[in-house]
Image (cartoon, rainbow, N blue to C red):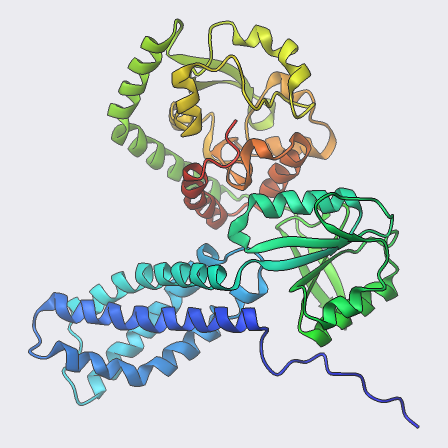
Length: 472
């Protein structure tokens, strides 16, 4: 007799979490479109019954939903781990351009007054921020309602600790590590640790977890066992993920391609063409000049406070290592007492990171300096470095000469680009990220550079500063 078919891995619907998120995004989009058109009709003030004219958008909503689906606005958010709000903006903008033209044509053919030029413009300008904001809000509601995604890891204890720290540092991902299996039988406090894989199938069948995350190195789990775990997850409707022990191999620029069913990870060499360099430099000049002008009163006030708080110069100047190893003088508001540099060697004994000085409470920091650091205001003079061309708004962290001496091998390529005021390191965790991982993060930025990524990091810097993430 033929072997009975196993239970299907193809599900008839999305996981409950993904189903709810997709529906929430759909509601956000349709509600945003209706509100945007309502505001457009009211703003023109040329209609006797704008509420009746607004109702004619209802027959178009299924077509809007289809258009957004074609642009991946419902698939990408459930496939990716991190929130995709910023990544979705280009697709959302393009879909709105196409949809707005279609809406104008529909109102022209329908038995209703056609849309005026002013109404089309207002609709286009209002719809993008309105829909984007509603998407963020409803995703937050779904996360609060459902709670974080429960993650179970099959990995060595060192990787488990790393995963727990990263997920704890980034609650916006909506993931929580609830347990782990360690085949090496090591112990990790605070987690449910099993020394074998025997209980995984029961764990998956009882739906106690939402995501199984496995280290995929050949030396850790056999390939056959890895495939069986993935199949088990698919049958139970649970997300399966795997990661390499060599984290640097999977940079943001890496893509998975398929050759007759064989998956091949491709990492193309990074390219920063002349036109892109000009655009990046132009953006640096415009932003730094505008911010220096707008923040001039604040900069003057901070200078006075620093001067009154303690003896010493207002600005702290330090030699940093920039692009291609070129030295430059970085500017910051002084946040420490005079002679702070002479105390570094002694304080390194208390540093939580052996590669650079990170202290829970640095005794050299002044009263005003502590407030400036807590709000990242001490970094503002670096806008002058950006205007001069020593730095960029976004780029790898510029290191002092002492710390740069600890950078070896492939990590030296972080100097291929101009250092920045903000970047991956600052957005992802700042001083909460160890020195070795900071080098990996900076190399990932260099290897996957794009202008869109720079814009995304600039936007993400604002909530990172507000949350005071990784402030030393």
